[in-house]
Amino acid sequence: MAEGLCLCGVLRLLTSLFVPALVASVTVTLLVFLVLLCVRLWIGKKKKASVQLGKDGEERKVVAFFHPYCNAGGGGERVLWCALRALQKRYKDAIYVVYTGDKDVSGEEILAGAGGRFNIKLSYPVKFVFLEKRYLVEDRLYPHFTLLGQSLGSILLGWEALVKCVPDIYIDSMGYAFTLPLFKYLGGCRVGCYVHYPTISTDMLSIVRDHTARFNNAAFISNNPVLSRLKLIYYVLFALIYGWVGSCSDMVMVNSTWTFNHVLDLWKCSDRISIVYPPCDVQTFLDIELSQKHELKEHSVVSIGQFRPEKDHKLQIRAFSTLLAKKTPEERANLKLILIGGCRNEQDELRVSGLKTLAADLGVPVEFKVNIPFEELKKHLGEATIGLHTMWNEHFGIGVVECMAAGTVILAHNSGGPKLDIVIPYEGHDTGFLADSEESYASAMDRILSMSEDSRLQIRQNARRSVSRFSDQEFEVNFISATELLFK
Image (cartoon, rainbow, N blue to C red):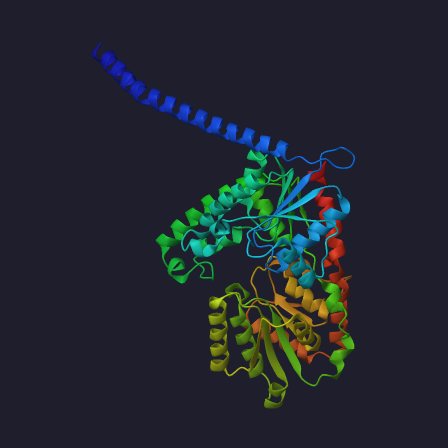
């Protein structure tokens, strides 16, 4: 009897604790649902109020690209303008919008910049929606937990974009996957994305798990088991969330096989993902005459790429030093290393100073060409014997394509896009070389320089023929094919 009374007391206690908690949980859930429903209805009302009709009386679709740095002038921006040009050719009656944070310039200046940098002119007008809160996605705002901070910041920036203009079709062209569910579920849009590189990858998880020090995994973390474990937990949780937001996309385009594998692994989107290689301005470099190189008495090794830590310019200098150690004084006099790249800020300029110090310490003659005009870049590539690339797991590698189109013998890192998509046999013939260490780079350079001019010419010709896969025309065809799903 006493035991029964005791059991009843326990049940009453549990009930008194559980029922209020359950009621509170249900109440909060209902309130959140009602708030989201009200927001959804409000946004839907805004959308209806802004509908425009075409000449045929049908509603004109609004197609919006989320590209907060559309005036930056890099490879990602070339993708944006080529994508807009392709869609305007295919869907002439649509209204095209670009969400941008470049509020210090006008829309006309942005379009003029795209024309000047990329020789891309659009057939129809583009509406620019200028965002005030772009600072929310800048890494300087988040010295710690940068991935999470920028991702949450992109949601707030995306909300500003959605409130200012509600599109029918939303395409994230800059890698802000956390905006996808926002536009899909609150905006009621068809959503797609072009992924240049995943925000997090299984390679990043492996680096932390294996206690490997790299530019995105500081030595004090990799050397500390506790910090490494905590960072791994953070990365795993972030990867799960990233996988969910990415899976909300109705259509996914990626720029390379490497990106394809990582996005597919995290997003589980095998039924709607396709590889669309980025458009490279190959024709400009194909105009360089290969015969120029026959008369050169000295050989230059040229690297092109921004002076960022992941580009690993230090490896280039050390490998070139190892190569010079194998040569006679006369041979060394005819070899030079030229590093061409852009500096974005003071940190990049300090990085260049550090590279100059390293070159001086090793006694390596290195020419630094910082923020040079395009014609000067083209001239150096036209005269170079070897095009050098050392970034580990480059997601694609536009610079590698440009070197091959210019007629250099490419020597790229044996990983990522260069390994899987670019420096691969063409019609059964070699198109370049791959390496992954100081010694292997030095050996590969030595081998290239020891080849006869005819042997080098054959490789350069193979490489040139192979890069047509990365032309503007190929991109447009594949982009239109991938995005048809959004317009149906």
